[in-house]
Length: 128
Image 1 (cartoon, rainbow, N blue to C red):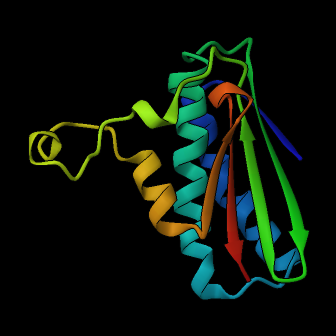
Image 2 (tube, rainbow, N blue to C red):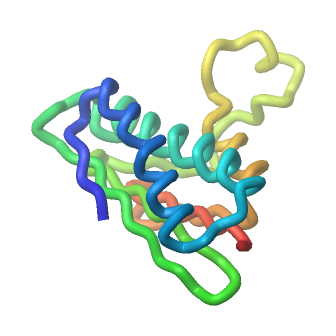
């Protein structure tokens, strides 16, 4: 488990964390990039959108390994959100908008994404 205060600079810690879990769980190098990008997006969203950069609030990262997959859970202390209401970043009217692609990237790069606790937690699954 990793606990970060909601300072955007703390996103830099994610790369070392991913390296550590990939070594610990013997995860193939070709999956490393997918985990790194997905987890970076999830932590960034938790800090900025969930906790509103409030450094008194934390982001929690947990991992769980099964024989054929790893699940990574990122939780914030914000109000949550409804993932079904996110605009599709691939729609023509959204292509030039800045932002709005984090959840899309997580869904593309992981094997499964679940939103829990009224959107305060995202759980990403990666086959290993």
